[in-house]
Length: 221
Image (cartoon, rainbow, N blue to C red; front, side, top):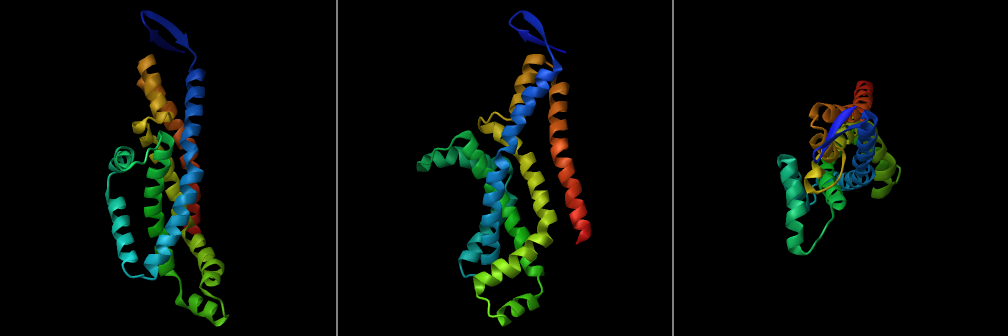
């Protein structure tokens, strides 16, 4: 039980109610994953191929953008998207802002992952595909991509873990997720240890198995 102060009155609230409320809020964090990973993987692959083939101008511009995103504090990217876009007529809600921000960072990191996978591939794979008469898209989708995904899977799983942890930052733009909810509970119960301990357990329950999977996949490389 925890004690909650409402005006001048105190009342007992079951710990299970805190866990339930935080669990529901955590689902809001996880709701970002399908969108962010879909966008991040798709754009990351496209950027990786463009940079791998060194398409003039576009490749250099993308390289600069990727380095800016990777070198910028995540908080700055959040505020840039949330506060700067309205000045050019783009209004986004908290959830949409979270998707955009998390997708930007995921795309930047995944593009480097996929580009490393491309650079590590044996040139003989490309030559063999060309010898079979495959066009560029057949070679890319049937030969190159499956091998890249296989070799970079540990890093992809690692990015999933990073994305889950990064979702906590969207509370700064008004998204009601697990960290924001924990602050609300903490203010009511005056028991920060309990609230943040529950939050930590939720993140550990989801992220730790993924970390184990990532290490096992890496060990098989």
